[in-house]
Length: 109
Image (cartoon, rainbow, N blue to C red):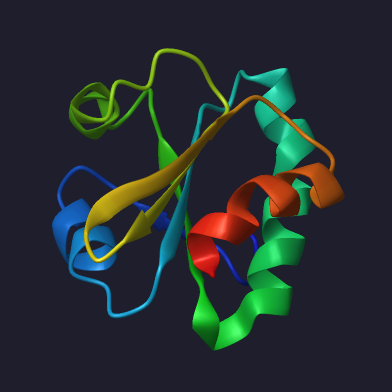
């Protein structure tokens, strides 16, 4: 697991994401997913740069299908930004860092 990105599961999603004091970016991924591996370094960079203002976590959809179904994750990678326990922005697919940040920025402001 990347240094600034932690893993969440169905069991701790409520505590780690929904009850977080800061916005949380959740990367829904799976080990076999090529685009997921492409976006992982971008997600890690965002986590490193945003520090305490944004929590970044990954959820393996193969091992945690309940949470993925709850948020209608139909394809991966899917990134969902949660604010105050609610989805604020969803980005589906692997994007370059600048495009991903542009997508997320309005929901973080």
